[in-house]
Picture (cartoon, helix red, strand yellow):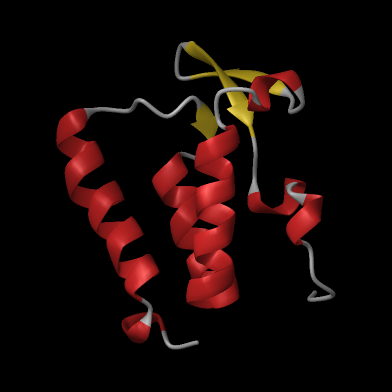
Length: 93
């Protein structure tokens, strides 16, 4: 899908580049929630990107119980990339 026509990607980039830059980094995960959203909107389009973003935000609190933890930027963070979400995998390479 064309990036310019994807409102989810536009909103995720707006949030990452402007709101998070002022509000500070609150996301406990790597990549950050807005970067994750931008990536899944870019890869999968609006509908699947929206579902993956909502799924991540809903499960963010308990994700540390299932995903690896890493120490980065002076904090322990949850390693949760789009690739690690097997439920959403497709046959793309």
